[in-house]
Length: 242
Image (cartoon, rainbow, N blue to C red; front, side, top):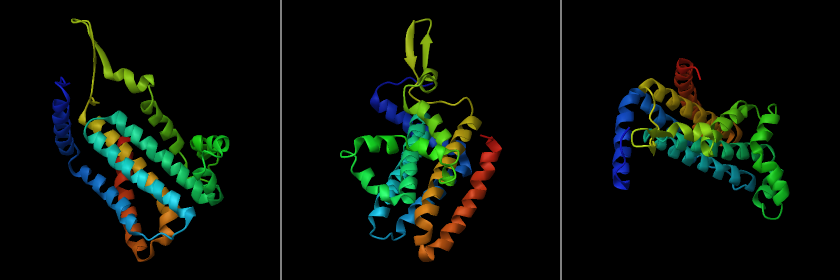
């Protein structure tokens, strides 16, 4: 663990962490770029000027942004922040999934101030809606449980904070770990695969529910990339057995 000597030193350590962790990941680092390529390629798909698509499309951009934030944080050794980003991406994706299946609720989603109680009941608990309606939202099966795991790190849950603190018994001083160091390189790679796998699952919801039928000539190429990525990420998921 490195002692922090001010904000500039904190930034220096972050840059060191990025460099060191890219080395640890080796060839697997390329998986971030390949998943980003899937997200980014789909930005070239022309969507209709339809209010029923506009909000889900915007939520897709938010999910992509959280993918960037999450993986960048992970390389800097901020695993807690990565989980918060994954949780935010899941929230956006659950909402988009629901609205794509129920476009008549778009107005309710937009007019939160006018229908606050109805909005709260539906969209504040959107994870519960996914969990309780698996037949209607099959692509979200298992994701509410991942959301629950991430929530431990998005709030002041004991599992999310206590591992970061320790007592210096000699100086009788409480210290905090500003970076989430793993016990081994193998453990670091496991959480790397975990994050990538679920950001990939998030992408698939948007692909199947919003993008695929509108991809035109790009559809065949993107489906090839999806299949190739599935093979790679599934092999790693099996290796780390999470």
